[in-house]
Each structure stands twice: as structure tokens, then as C-alpha cells.
Image 1 (cartoon, helix red, strand yellow):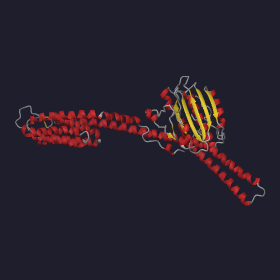
Image 2 (image 1 turned 30 degrees about the vertical axis):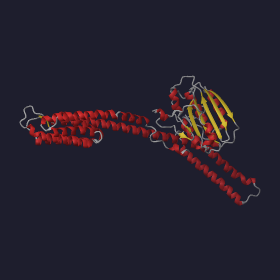
Image 3 (image 1 turned 120 degrees about the vertical axis):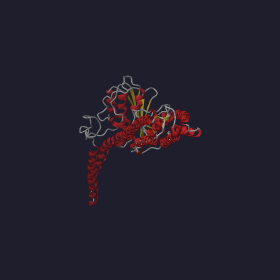
Image 4 (image 1 turned 60 degrees about the horizontal axis):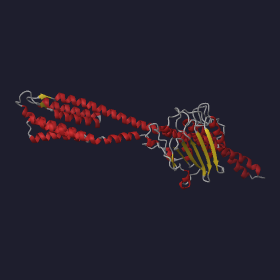
Length: 491
């Protein structure tokens, strides 16, 4: 199988998260401008208020602009900014203490003035948004302890106390910042969990499709092993006077074939679904294929299309070229691809006209199923939307490829190429099998569609695969899923 399909790209389910991140980046520059202007206002207001302390021009300008610089620095380094803001407040309070002696009542705000409180509150807000809650609480505790030491132990003469008010406001801001940080972390974890869930769902879907294919191929392999066993048993009777050595070798071949058949049955038991009514995992309860039913081949395409016509679709089939002898795996995959394409047309394009083309090339088998615009109302469909994933896996297993795209007239087209011998075909030899020119391929990633979290559209060979359920939803509402063309359909 295609090794590229075994893993889902890590960013497959997060395009909307990247879009939000880009929008936030566009808002950064205006936010920086607002913070810088706020810091400048705090610096000028602090310098003006320091004049009431009698600190002098140099020290007043230094402490005032230190508070403004702390606000700007908090955008990138909140912890050093907090230390700078607190240090500037302590220096201003201690230097202003002599000016409080003999000051007329009421005294100036001390040890925090309005500009210092505003600056420190902004710094603590940025700190609470950027660091762990334990660090924010520790910074708040250090601020409260420093305020108590300056006001309670060192003290002043005549002043209006602002220590309790400043600590209370800082505590409220730290609480709000911590809450917003927790909310942001919860959203981030939710996005990560959704991404992981989508990836796991995609991997599980991929494994289910591969197990389904393996269960179907079991019959093909078992048939060949049974033929080998029978031929080895009959061969001695076709030779006159066979030697004992020949008899022993043929008996060994037959015994090995029988043992291989037994091992195949054990493998099938491991892969068998849990539904006892569907031992091969080919349909819903009660509609599964019997274990002894033969796997379909190209000869049964006519019966498949008759069932589809009976379900209400106008199906026209054309066959070009002389059909060679394809391996059973190629015939089985071709049947399933056509069956899934017809089932999609039943679900998403009721009342449409469907054209099925089977073209036998020298290189392999080319299949094309095209439906017109639906002529009946399209209603909600309960389908899982994994049909194209199974098509892709079947084609990739044989070295082929599948493409799906909307047509210019509102319909939908599915094209597949399967190499004649089940081996990969060079790109140069399959250029004429790519989608027609002029058609716009729709990719779920580019649509940023939240209904496609699994990222089922991937490159498989030279063509691009897009989920028909998602592409059809872009042009029309979904429709209900009628009964599949045959009981073996994957719905």
C-alpha cells in the first residue's frame, strides 16, 4: 500500500487555528502603539507627581520614566519589568520620606501615587498573562510585603496612606490576569486535543479501510492456494510411472498449500469485524456477504449498474478496448471503485444521469464515473464519508491512482487508473489519465472546512484526491443515503 497514506500530517486539522493566530499577529502593532502611549503618559504623570515629594528634577524624571519603561518592558520581559516598577516605587517613597515631615494636612499619597499604581497594575497584568500562577502570586506577595515594610516599618510623617488600596487593586488584577491565562490555556489544550482526536480518527478510518480490503483479498489468495493444492494432488496421476521423489515433492507442495490456507483463515479471524451478521465487514447488520460468496469481478459490473438503475438513477455504460486477463485483485478493486462512485451518486445526486466508462488500455484499466447535476432535492446523508478513502487505498495498493472533482455543469466525476498487472505506472505514461483541463479541483485544506478534520484528501500517485462528500457539500446540501447498489457496498 501507499506508505504516504499511513500517517496524517500533524497540521492537517488546524488551519482555522493558524488563521486565528495570523489575525492576532495583525493586531499586535496597534496594541504595541497603545501600550507605548500609555507608558509615556504614566511617565509624564509620574514626573509631575514626584514634584509633590520634592525629589528634584533628576530623580523625579528618573523614577517617572522608570515606571513608563517598566510598562513597555512588560510586553516582552514581565518579570524584570515588575522588579523595575517595584524598585522605582521604593526609591521614590524612601527619597520622599524627608519631605513628609511638617507637610500640611492632608499629606501626599504615599508610598504609592496614582501613576505608580497604574504602572504597577499594568505590569502585574502582563505578568499574570505570561507566567504561571505561582509566579504571579509570588510577585503579588512580594509587592504586598515591600509595601508593608516601607509604610509599616519605615513609615513617614504626614501622608495619605495608599498601601492597602494599591495592594488590593494589584490583587484583583492578578486574579483577572490568572483567570484569562487559564482560559487561554484551556482553549489551547482543547485545540490540541481536537487535532489529536482528528488525527486518530483519520488513522482509525485508514486502518478500517485497509482491513476491509485485506478481508476481501483473502478470498482471492485463498482461491489461488486451493488451486495449487488441487493441482499438486492431481499432478502425479498425469504422469506415467511418477518417481517417488516427484510424489514427495508434490505432496509437500499440497501440504504447504493446505497449511497456508489454514493460516489465511486465522488471519481472517483476526481481521473479521465484531458484527456476527457481517463477518466480512462489508455492510450493515443483516446485509453482509456470506463467507462463501465469491468476490465480485468486472463481469458483475452489468448487474451492479442494473441495481443502480432500479434505485432511480439513469446509468449509461460504455466499454472501450479489448479486455485482457486482469489479476483478481485488479478486478475486485475496479468493481469496488465503480460501486462506491455509484453509491455516492445515489446519495448526493438523486435523479441525475450517470455515465460509466470502462477503458482497457495497454497499460491498464481506466475507470470514469460522471454524474450530472441532481434533479431532485438533496437531503441530509448519514454516510460516514469514507468512500473515497477506500478508493484511494485500493488504487494505491495496485500502483494506480484516483481523482475526484466537480464538473463545470454542477455534477461530479471520479476517475481511476489501475495498472494492468497491479504494478505502478510511470508518470509519463499516465499523463493522459489525469483530470480534464479547465476543472477546478477543490481541496478540503484550502476550504478550511471544519467538517473535514481528518484530512482525507491527500496526494495518491499523480492525481489529487478530494473527498466527494466534502466537495459536494460545497455546492449543495447533503442528501440521504439510499440502499447501496448491492448488499456488498460499503456504506
